[in-house]
Amino acid sequence: MTEKLIVDMPVIVEGKYDQIKLDSVLEARVIPTRGFGVFRSEEMREFLIKLSQKTKIIVLTDSDGAGRVIRNHLKSFLPPEAMINLYIPDIEGKEKRKKVPSKAGTLGVEGMKAELLRKLFAPYARGAQEVSDRGGITKADLYDDGLLGGVDSKLKRYEIAKKLSLPKELSANAFLDALNMMCSYDEYKELLK
Image (cartoon, rainbow, N blue to C red; front, side):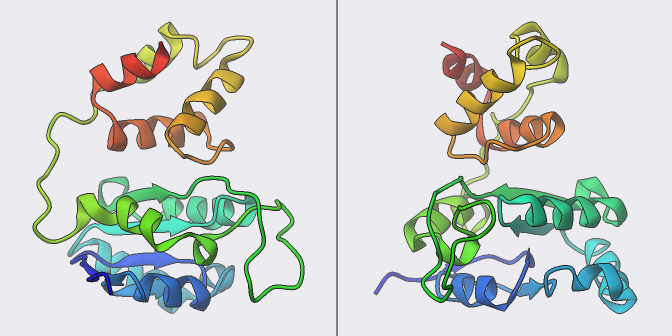
């Protein structure tokens, strides 16, 4: 059996099945939002705000529309410097426990393979070497490289997202955040080729 990754930061997910999946891969404090329950619970909101004042928080939601809405809601009250946004790829399929696929037809966090989740969380595991050469990519770079503000810019972002196993429906800002977490400037330029 593969050893669990120890992640000292709390991880926010959508629901209990996502929590169960992560509990099989991580030793971490996993906090489910109960889906859209986070919109109605002032207690959860206050708890997450207080938590974000003490530590960074990893956010991992499904790549579908509901996941984006929940992530954006969290962004509306959590400080950006406290959030680490992780993204799962768009993989067509249906979770085993469900009778029909999601509206988007893609797997959620609970449907991801353990190896993929380990790879996603590895940079945040206890003892991981911090990668200092990541980041440095700006909106101006995206614009200059035709990934922002151009006729086919969205399509070009989709292609880069696919290469990085990111969901294709990321906003330009979320795409930039993900790039800066995953790539150095040189790696980004190499992807463009």
